[in-house]
Image 1: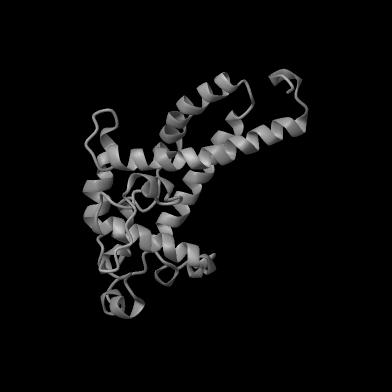
Image 2: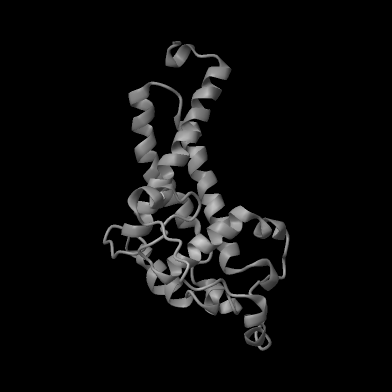
Length: 208
């Protein structure tokens, strides 16, 4: 096999593609760990992380409040801030830089691309879980919310709001499956419907 510095462009591409695919798998476990031990556990190393529990989960429940009823609810963690797009990649880089050094193959670019793709997917999905198209003024890409995958992940996340120790993954629930935290309890609450929430919305502005 060609050495690290003697590779042609397509070899770099294949190794980084392999890094991307591998990181998608690894990132499911990283996301699971961060969600459990930073966002749902008081952690002195990342003290602001627990705001996810005290702010987001205190505002968005597993009932009609799972969806934002007004603009004020949008201030409680429905989307990432700049910190997540800086701190999480730095944490992941501490994993993937040594991987490239040990393998002596160019995988870091692909791994970090998977990290940012995962963050973007998390942000995109999580916002739409809590602010669905029929509650938004801007309804572009509303078709995504009608797909089977979105409905599955939305239901998966709703059950997390019922039990915070279950369904810790948002994008790829592989770690939930492996660690036994995957829940699909049929007795859990149903997703809020437009019919049930219409009365509450009559005296509120759209969430945005």
